[in-house]
Image (cartoon, rainbow, N blue to C red; front, top):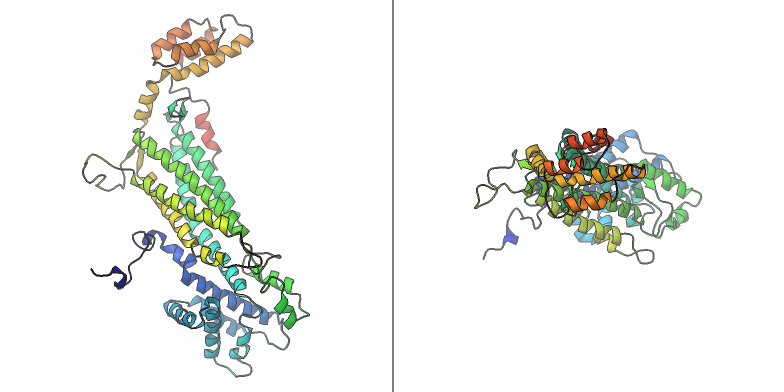
Length: 471
């Protein structure tokens, strides 16, 4: 048998880099191994520029604007050749961050200039005072921030906007609500979708306010090497300024590693968004099975390989599965990353390499849910038919009015709950049955008229108006 492992180009092991690659490809620029190395190069270059521009080390000149531009171009032009070169260096060093340091020293040497005054002369300031985690934590913070703000959040926001728009479109369409799977107080489809949209909006708001923390303080967070080399510098202030210059929030107190608490907070919020979206998918799947929505647009021509009449709700099912995989990873990331033995262990290093996979499955689910929703048309007649078959739901408002009238001293309103229970529980009644019952109660004429005109379709309270609370 031919080994597929020897195929060229290599065959993807996982679905995200295989059949689903087009959907998740934008995350590669942020959460791949190559993106991690590019951000490491970025942080090292910015630290070198910061050290020299601020003239923190005596007798080291500030870089010229042209030199800074050339250094930053190393980051901007980072591509496949650089990825391969770093891989070769890492095989020699058996250390990924050291490979980045040597890679940059090569670049400075190649930029030329006088031996005593050119960029090569300051190459030893690359990675100055840093432990690997100083570079890594800042790199991951920049990567995750970019992935959230430039890829995941825009996609999620577009989906939630579509859910909110559907809620507004269906705000007035009556729906037989079900609690515990049983017919309950009528509502509108728009209001029920608005509940989901509102929940999702709240999570997006939390995610949009997320903090991305970073630190640069040496091997065990004490600035030991920094102070030994340059004792008169205010290293905490230098660190704070540098971290904030990257668009991150400075963490003043850490061990060798940045504590990752902010990551755990972010992943918990995204996992919660995923769980609400999962709830949306199961609800829409159920509504489709009840005939409340028809799958008519963009679903393709094959629903079942053997039953030509079927159109399967595959988008929602695919989303459910991917949300579950994403949450399994987000949960373990959130619980594991906040733990570290003493001042450092390497569990976080291996764990963080799964961040891209967690985001990828969430992004794939968002895409499928959006496509599923875009392929639906509401079927109000099916919803109306269910309401017409369940007149007993009007038992609730009638007994509520009887309670109020009884409290006001109106005669004949005794035991309202029990009387409606006897009329409605365990059997179906129609409009005539209910109107006959209402006529026998001796209600005030205006109230009696109101109940004689009420139907399950009109007993929706303020459901339609509540949709307006959506942002």
